[in-house]
Image 1 (cartoon, rainbow, N blue to C red):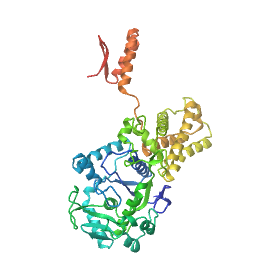
Image 2 (cartoon, rainbow, N blue to C red):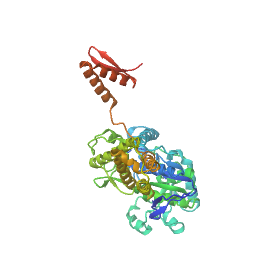
Image 3 (cartoon, helix red, strand yellow):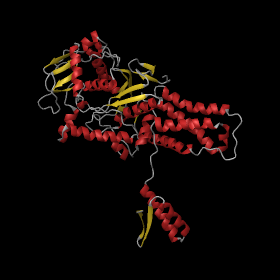
Image 4 (cartoon, helix red, strand yellow):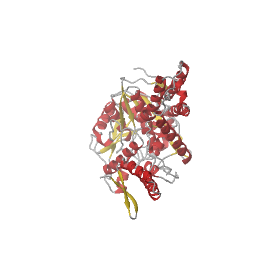
Amino acid sequence: MQHPLSLYNTLTRRKDPFEPVNAPFVGVYLCGPTVYSEAHLGNARGPVVFDVLTRYLRHLGYTVRYVRNVTDVGHLESDADEGEDKMAKAARAQRQEPMQIAQHFVNLYRQNMLALGCLPPDIEPQASGHITEQISMVEEIIANGFGYEVNGSVYFDVPRYNAERERYGKLSNRSIDDQLAGTRDTLAGQDEKRSPLDFAIWKKAAPEHIMRWPSPWGEGFPGWHLECSAMSRKYLGQLSDIHGGGLDLMFPHHECEIAQCQGSHTHTDESRFWVHHNLITVDGTKMSKSLGNFVLLGDMFKGPTATLTQAYSPMVVRFFLLQAHYRSPVDVSDEALQAARKGYRKLMNGLRLLDKLQLPEGTERAADTEKPDAELRKLAADIFTGLNDDLNTARAVASLFNLLRKFNGFFANPATLGTVSEAALQEALHSYRTVVTEVLGLQDEPRANAEQLLELTLGFYQEAKTAKAYDKVDQIRAALKGQGIVIKDLKTGVDWAYEE
């Protein structure tokens, strides 16, 4: 099964032809959210990018298993294995059980992802539901000599792994010497670790720690990096096809994942392709909760916010994220989102146009359509050229607009439809509709308020009644009745009700 799709592989630092481990089956894993709070716009980019990637792989004929995890334990406040668990901290602050916090924000996250047009993942495992698998992986790492236990905690021995198995830092292209030079001052207070580069794969639970499980090393909880290695292996096998997330996860999270998989019995890099999307910025600064410059998705859909002056619908937000290549940063602003809204509506107007492109009755097609057909097919093919080139949605969108300009020309002068064959026209129309709706996942959103339109119609009805234009009165009554609405003439005015 051969397709021209290439993807930028962080592991090789080049665009590689996409070749699945076991075609036509493809395993995709996206590092999902830590559900201690509501998702912001930056948390949406990964799901939108990987949704389009999954959709396109399926369009190409692959059978895809898409896994997007939920982190509900083990993600500490610091990547240096310090601080409180983010879930436990939120639970303590709100005086709830951690799983109450997790479930509440998982529900919100799923609602927001569905609103953004993201198809639900095939599997959505939660870290707290896979403690057994994580303990097993820790045991394997210890058995292979790359893990050691100290006072109930287990750490991954990075220097030994680097010397005996793989270069630690190969994903992020960092040398271990440079990493050591940057961490020499941090070893104080971490006496349990043999090296400041070592990271926790199992942490002993302090007496006040809420989330804890029994293990061979005492009560504790898994390290944050461990969950994805264990769950990816469980659901996608020892070597998946695509594993990804934001650039901020490349180090240390994904670097540690590779080390854990290599250090256990799998002896693989966990995934053939490592795909990382760039970040959302505000005035050039990464959007994050710690900086206070984030925009919650729910607030963004309702508007206005501290950062934005108005609301933006989920489909506009989705288009905003897709009009840039996933490896490019995206800066959020009213101006950028308003431009995205215009672009999104232009594509939606294009969908409305497709069924109207018909050759006028009595008009004959040209005898020779070979050259116009080739030009039209080239416009449609350019869309897929962009998608095949490292899922370049920005280029694909630009090609869609080029094709749409051709459609608009046909609509403005229907006789020109006779210059192309029916087959070429239908292929182009199909390509446009398929990419917009099935691959990019953009759907038309109702922009009119039904209540306001109904009040406006009743106003026209009242005017027609006052003018004694009874034919117009009857016409409005019949039109509304066709929609299940009956008009009520009252002494105080006009009202409506559902037809019973």
